[in-house]
Image: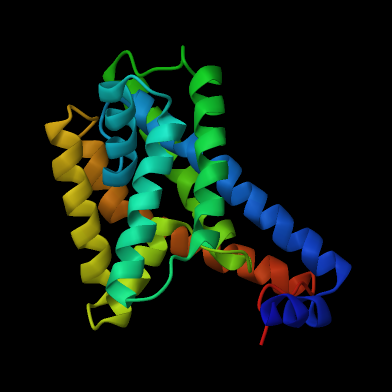
Length: 218
């Protein structure tokens, strides 16, 4: 519990509140963006398409599919590191699953019925995902299992970009075989999210510094 003592000694009440808000934005809005990209029918990111396709193929809620793939990622990361499971990373997946089911229900009638509507939904979805991810990675709370899996591969000498792209490619292939939403939107999400995330990350970082908020611990 040394990490808890460190956090408690270094973070003020407003720091806790700000980090909590950033985390809530991340796990709450990221699924909104994902649902919008899926509902555009132009294709979603590989991991997201995999979870939606797996849920539909098995006849289960998307949240359960997310928990299944997340737990598999936790196991793979532990195997790669040859260490104990990092169960704390599963916390984020739990909330992501809940919010995904919620947004799917709320937006069940919001779909891309023509090219214009599909493009608009895809672009809005990408913006929402990027903003949520930027907020999520800025806060001090644990990452999700897939990000931790990429980090585990990186720790073993695999370049970070190669590890991320490799995982995305595997997810895309499996999602395609399961009949998932794979298309031009998948390419947009895979290649276009990075720069948008960077922009939101820089903007949020400046805002946090201006407000004298601490989002890291030494």
